[in-house]
Length: 351
Image 1 (cartoon, one colour):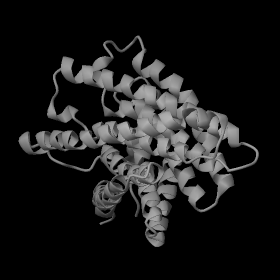
Image 2: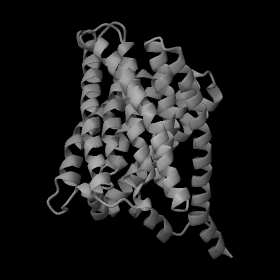
Image 3: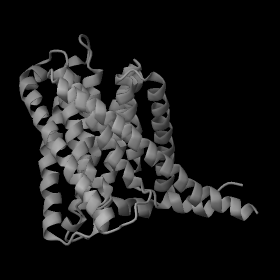
């Protein structure tokens, strides 16, 4: 006997818009394992990511049709609205993974979906979540999910750079899209950082407020590095030639700052769970830790190759294995959570 209809409906109605971070985390670690030559492991993670994307798209469509008011309420909530950008990033990460298999048509479809949704959400989310006149002040709602806007922008750049052919139709257009979205994301990072920092300094910070999504502040720097490294490696095109040196230098700076953030984020977790003894339980936002860790590893690998920095590449390789270990822990915790909330109640009713 399966889970009750009421339990499933409740899960769908309260679905976190940022749950696509599961796809992002699984997809980026699949890419990391592919770069290391662990084909079977990479395929297993890719299968998890692809299956999760399909399930989450179906559940989101169900939520839009059945629980439209709750769906719209998330758009108007500055604490949850920016989570919708995880759909963009998840789609583009899957598309990037497809390029490694030579599935260019599938990757192009992913780029089209990701680019259109990035462009649309880039105007809709800030207007509804930040400028919505019904929620004032907005600043207390600023949190780590705001950096997902940056991640979405850079995910488009990564996929466009990965798709660019050395010759042929679309080379210049993909170069333009890659540099354009990289530049937008790079400007959005300090904007989000200032607003989130203002919230931390101006309003009381409780342990419960320091959610795992703050790790996206590091993940946003990592994907900016990855996008920059991929652009540096692109074939010659007017837009790439005009910015290659600037992007290469900026990527190193973003990598350094992202590395500096890691001890800060670890200390924040210690303050939350050890000092204030807040229980560590499974939550969808935990995937917001795994994706930055995986992205940091992959970014280090590509930056080390693009700028000939072997120490950065080595750090990236170590980071990829740390990310995989963390992915395993959170994935098992998620399965346990689903077992306790969906399967076990159904078995109890069957008795």
